[in-house]
Each structure stands twice: as structure tokens, then as C-alpha cells.
Length: 347
Image (cartoon, rainbow, N blue to C red; front, side, top):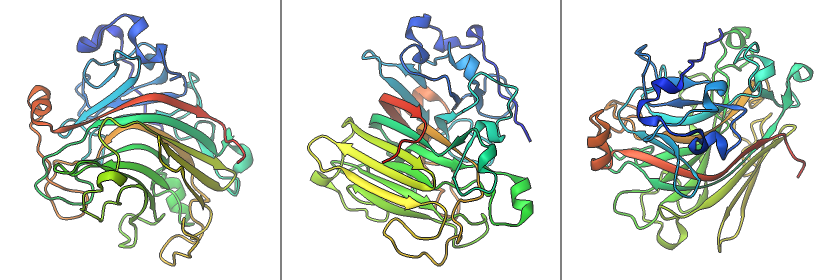
């Protein structure tokens, strides 16, 4: 079902008010994005979505703004309003291939991309796609009751498959809304540096115990390793770049950092062969072939305040009062100096 987006006028921005020369869309091409922010200004009990049209004149002085250098800052506290069925807050962009043409439904073929092997590939507006980013992580949440995998971390880019009940009903193993890639930065509170890694989620139903994220190291450790990465890690405030380039069925990944060797991965998203070239017998044998996809980028805070069983619920600190939570370090913040969407480019 099409989910209506929320139109926010300049009059309702409150602390986000500023001249149009200062809004992010004046410096970054946001014409094919919408954003979810950790606010509920319309009091509907859900995190606000700012659609593409409104995004052209939108900023928020705490959560989405340009810094003094003209770079784009995303910030999200541990405790705030979240999207439906999530306990994690976010200040995060969602790709909107349709741009300003709101007559095209959010979940339609015209607003998302497919793999070349998709049975309806000819009907999609786009096959594959490319996202390039240069960023630095300013801060990650540093207070967690349970130091589980997602604690002290933020996702700064991802590809999301669509959650689609009609696809699920077809029974072909698609439509679960999983993520073929999430790019993480994680830094333990007492460590000198943090780690950058990416994860591939097996494309299985939510209640399948084998549905899990497989982590691949870029710099430092993956989330299973609690050792300080020290010189092989990435410090807060240290800039790095990533490119996600999906060409036909292959996802090509490129990570760069000054004075380090470039890190490259590739994985075929239409089978169950992992990024190390090994068959993963627990994964969907057709990978993400039958799904539709979209890019996301920003600050997707992984430090959930929910205290419960399961790997995702770290019981991170947070009051819901932004001034208090900022002072206590219960938030995540990321600054992008480059963020660019484009069609897939052959390697």
C-alpha cells in the first residue's frame, strides 16, 4: 500500500528555520531523496517523513543541516520517535527515483530499482544504481547496558529491499524487506579508534533463525570483535569514502581512506554465493533476484534504548530530552562532504 508522505512547510520547522541559502538542498542534489527525521511534528505517533518537494527547503538545526564548511550533518538521538516496527532512531535519506512526480507510488517499479535478473526487469525505471559518499562519523552513542553487536554503532549507507506483502504471498522467497548491504561504523567507548565494516543480510523471513547479517571487514574489526582496532581502525572525525555500484546483478563495493589501501568487494545478488566466493547453504538460493530495491544514507542509529532479548536490543541510555541526551553523549552524528546518486557504471 502506498504510504503518504508528510508535507512540512517552512512555518513548521521551528528550530530548523534559516535562509534558503543555508538549506542542504542548496549544496547537495537531494532531488531524488526524501528524509526520515527523529521528530513527530504532526503528532501522529510516527517519525516524520519529509518528501522530496519539501526537502528542497528543509533543514533542522539539530538533526539535519549544513555545517560551517557546507557539509551535510545527520544527527539522531538514542531515544526519540522511530519508524513503524523499529526501535532505532534515524536521520536518514531514502532514494526516490521518481523525484518530484508524486503520482508514482513509493513502492512502484517506477520509484525503485531491480536487478537485471528480475522477472519484470523491463518494467523498472532503473536496473541497478550507484551511490557515492565521503563522510566522517562525529559521534556514536557511548552508553549501553548490554554491549551487544549494534551498540556504539551507526549505519551510514545501505540498500534496502522492499517489504512487500504481495511478493511474500507469491511464495517465491522475496518481499521480506531485508538489506543486501548496510555500512557500519562502530567505536567502543574506551577505544582509540572505531571500525568500518559492511553486512549482507540473508534474504529469509523474519522468523527464520538463519536470517542474520554476515559482516565483512573494511578497516578495523567486525562487530564480533571487541578488541581496540588502534592503528588499523578509523578515528571519529576521520573522513573516508564508499561507493556502492550495482551493475546488472553484481554489487561492487569500493572503500577508500587516505594513506590506506583501497578495499574492494563484489557479490552477486542473485545467488547464495557470499562475498568470499563460498556457497552459503543457509541463504536464499536466488539471493535478492525477485525484490525491488532503494538506497539509503545518513545516520541510522543502531544503539536502541529497548532492553530485551535478541541481538538488536542493547538497552542504550536516553531520556528523550535532546538537550540532556546530547550532553550525556546518547546520540549519533555523521557529516557527509559528498553524497551522489547516479545510474550504475560498468566496472
